[in-house]
Amino acid sequence: MCGVIGYTGKQSAATVIMDGLARLEYRGYDSAGVATVFNGDLHLKKGVGKLEEVEAACLLSRLPGNTGIGHVRWATHGGVTMENAHPHVDCLNYIAVAHNGILENYQKLRRRVVSRHKLVSETDTELIAHLIEEYLVPGAPLEQAVTKAVKEIKGTYALVVTSTVEPNKIVATRCGSPLVLGLGKGENFISSDFQAFLPYTREVVFLDDGETVVMTPGKVHILSASGKKTRKDSVVLDVDLAVREKNGFDYFMLKEIFEQPQAILSAINQEKSALKKAANLVNNSQSVVFTACGSSRYASLIGRYMFSKIAHRFSDVIISSEFCYFGDSVDENTLVIAVSQSGETADVIEGVIEAQSRGAKILSIVNTIGSTLARMSDCVLYLNCGTEFGVAATKSFLSELVILYLLSFSLAGRQEEAEEELKRISELMDENLRLNNDEVPKAALKLAGHDKFYYIARGINFAVAGEASLKLKEIAYVHSEGMSAGELKHGTLALVEEGTPVIAIAPCDDTHEHILSNISEVKARGAYIIGLSDKPDKLFDIHIEIPRVNEYYYPLACIVPLQLFAFHSSIARSLDPDRPRNLAKSVTVT
Ligand code: AGP
Image 1 (cartoon, protein in one colour):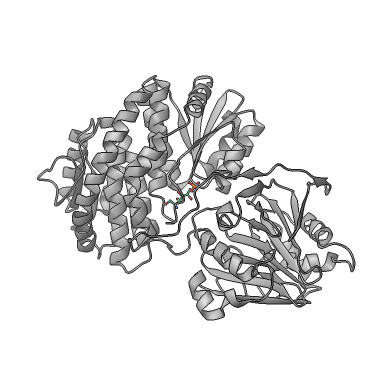
Image 2 (tube, helix red, strand yellow; image 1 turned 90 degrees about the vertical axis):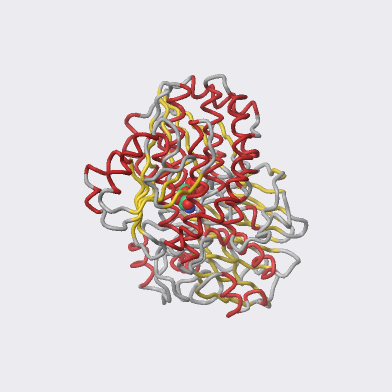
């Protein structure tokens, strides 16, 4: 997934675009580029690396002109090279294109385009620039050429296009990737995410698949999928501007870990009507299935336990990229609960579209207001945790858990009880964070030489083991496995040797005695035990203390020190926990 932005108006396009790209960098940071139109020429600069690196090398912000487009890339077609960085241009240097998405008919298109055009990159996006060039007719509007060109492509795209032919016009269109239009006074904006231009305007129009925006400084019109002018209502956003400040922390991820006690309180603050509607959807469905990816899937697995324990409702969790294989068991009596921080994860959206085609109702739990998933759901519960700049999910994961606790207890008519316990946990977490921020870095440093870790747990904490393992993999690049402690003896135990670090999640809940015996099994084979518990034990070589909470809520208490462990493991390996290699915050490709 990548981030795109376009601007036309009275300001320096490069300045507005660079400000926007800095807010879009969570979507990709392999390379960056800007193209502006000035004095009848296209001015284009781009480079490999994070935005600040490319700016230092290329001075993107110095490009002239009041109309332009910009892009931050997460590589899909073609390696991380300067040639593959966006924007891409046509043979005559009249047209520049930036794209978020993947063309599925890339090979066939490439064969068609390469016979008539000189290609300079390996990307699918460059093909679009040449297609527009072919359809550009002197005197005809740019949008006509764009519309004809996209008819030839299959796949997902959010495209922004500028040209010297109509120097103060931007054309943009979407299919499967997000695009939002920002309406200003004498200036207009288009981007993957409204946060990119929120400092300039709060009046936005969320675009749907097949729609095309044609914008100049003083005029905007929208074409429907059939090419006819159409009217769409704008909304004025009442959201906080995502402040890209670290407030004294060295990394966004650490700041966001420490924001979690407050995140609990914000997540509790749900619209009563929305929570009631969500509970009714669950009660009125015959079957409930969660669909999510990554951390959101681990949150869903915990939600599944809570639905069963508190509301005595069985549910299942299907990995979104696998959802399409379960479509036959989805019908109008099914409720699909889609959990997604970004609300733009393509795997999740694809599954939801499939479920809707079979009559299922959709309840989504998302952080991003106006996201594609939120706009296609029957009911939405918002995390309210603010923008999460760290690629690794921390406060958003915890907020998803809070929503799932609230929903589970609401189903049993015990919402107030949950709210009280969650508020208490918020205070305990604050205190525990300070305690753990001394102990955990020491443990991470001590174990920094190891290249494999096992996280073991039982019952509701099993998903915490999975989430903790995911954190370590994605920001410290260390292989690890989160697994059910009871499963160890069925195979994985063969991998345990002298000194193998095993992080045992052993809170004083109904799994405690059982997990202690599993710890004995691995310890007998030489494992080095990091015990996470509210009670010390002689089996632990290192004890990481967690607060004592009501037994259902230990996942909230356990995940925080494990997030810190992954963070400090990343730092101990001189890595950047905020922007891990190969990853991006919002995976808008399947
Ligand atoms: C979690 O740390 C990762 N960033 C990733 O697994 C993420 O949870 C996953 O891509 C799902 O994202 P979503 O919640 O925005 O759908």
